[in-house]
Amino acid sequence: MTLILGLMLGLSTVLTCSGQDELSRLVDALQLKYKRLTTLGADFTQVYTAPGERVRRETGHLLLKKPGKMRWDYTSPEAKIYVSDGRVIFEYVPSEGIATRIGVKDASDLRAPFMFLLGRGDLRRDFKQIEFATEAPANAGNRVLRLLPRKAQEFRELLIEIEPVALRLARLSFVDNEGARSDFIFSNVRENIEAADGQFKFQPPPGVRVVSE
Image 1 (cartoon, helix red, strand yellow):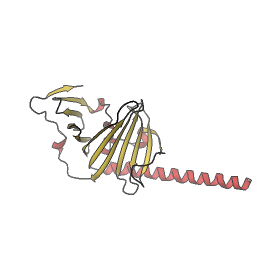
Image 2 (cartoon, rainbow, N blue to C red):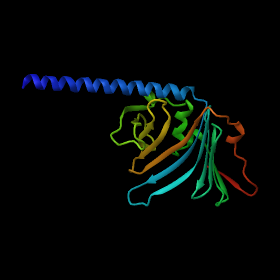
Image 3 (tube, one colour):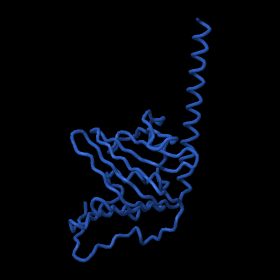
Image 4 (spheres, rainbow, N blue to C red):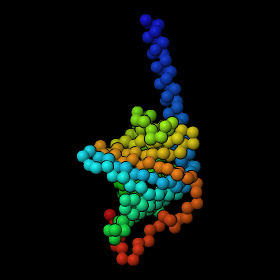
């Protein structure tokens, strides 16, 4: 019996070390890939769930470009634009006739952490704990990382789902301090595509008022 217990403990240690080695390699490879990435385009579905509230689902197109530029064009159920040149962020909902302006450093929007994909974040520096998540991936064969931020954030944990060979982004999920969850599910992901700087500038349409926050 002592021998069996010893073998079981030894196997458990080997599996734990193997899992940690895989995790470390995956984190390093993911960081390196997005450090080298110049642009990224994708279609997305954003799903918001919160205790006691109905599920909200939105779809659209995402475009990212270094250094720090991003553009979200929401198409359904309502058109809206969220665009940043790396210094300021504009959000514009045509049906409201008002655009809001805020500095990137002051933004608390959950889309702001996507700056990691633009090389501005460091996983090991910015998160105190990184591990494989226990929840199943949206796509079979993918790996899901669970990250806990080192400093106080608008979210208490981040989930990153990636394809383990090409390290292609499949999903980012944020769980906030109240238990609400925002899932960004990506498809048709395109890397290092052409993206003009003008796509990340916001020009208010005639009659649209811009409000600073």
